[in-house]
Image (tube, rainbow, N blue to C red):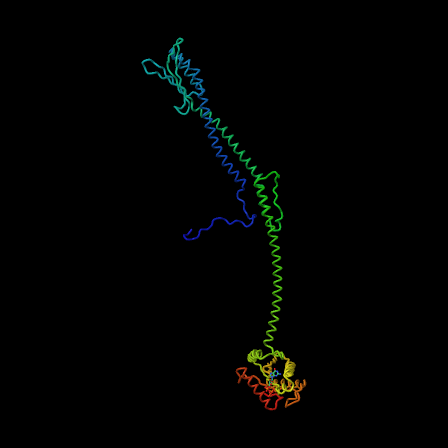
Length: 453
Ligand SMILES: Nc1nc2c(ncn2[C@@H]2O[C@H](COP(=O)(O)OP(=O)(O)OP(=O)(O)O)[C@@H](O)[C@H]2O)c(=O)[nH]1
């Protein structure tokens, strides 16, 4: 890994679902392997111990055999030496050498004034020294009662090959019985573990893997005798307890969610109702902010907004735009004659006349001053606008609102100034307004109750 690079966690990520888990070695198999390894170790140690014991027993047996041979030949050898019967002596030594457990015989004959004579006989192939036991005996002879004379000694050494041979025979039995014992023990443990643990653990894993919020009520039940009360019983009870808790928790959560949803719905209804209410209030406020409260026509503010829009539209579409400015004649006198309240009603009647006359979509009537009204007429030229203004005058005449104070008629009349927007000479709406005001002024000057342009 390059220096400075963070160490990467080599642990594989845990699977999300038990069914995604790939099983390695089962617990039972691991236990068997562990048991086998332990058994092999145990077998090795046991075989070593039993072999050592067998060797010790064989050595003891050989000791006994040598002692027996010594007992048997001790007197005969002593007699042959005393009688100096060398032939007999050698015959005895040969007989001793015939015995299976004897490997070497050494005979020392004492001679007065001289070093002892040593006679030795070794079985062919018998090893020198080694681990075989050795027996040493003194040879004495009693020529007459009460007199004992030491005449030599002999040493018997066991044949080590015999020890190994005997051990080999026993070793096979030791190894076989130990291995058999270990294998049977491992098998028994595996079978017991499988029966009492693995089967139930797998059942618990299957149960947990198939659990869903809907199946939390399905209890885990291990197929065991009721008398079994061990760690698996604890695990079974723990799983069922956990399922119970989870089930209760989910039920509580569902109930809370339902209540929350109901609250949310109620809140949404409330918000909807309030929004509708607010919209209505806003619409009303907006209408009020743009409407003249007396006549319900657009007020001056609204007129100022619309006039610019209409001017831009007329320019863009290359269509004519005309403006009427209407003023009630001798309205001061009207107020004086009928009172202010009737004056208001008169203004409302004039507004009605305007509404009834200008019904085309795009026609826009507004009260822009006390008794002064304006009408925007998109797509109408001055001539058409004059005709429309005459229709308004005619309607007012038709309504026959009495005005005894007027100096020009017996009913309420209007003076109307008409102007058409001229792109050549006008750059702002105010210039059109000024032109209409001038026309109105002319209408007033020419005797009122008329249309001028
Ligand atoms: N009743 C009523 N009167 C208003 C209202 N607004 C303005 N007036 C009156 O309208 C009158 C306008 O009078 P003037 O500007 O002198 O004009 P006039 O009497 O109509 O004379 P000419 O315009 O020259 O024909 C004033 O007396 C104002 O008090 C209103 O909302 N209600």
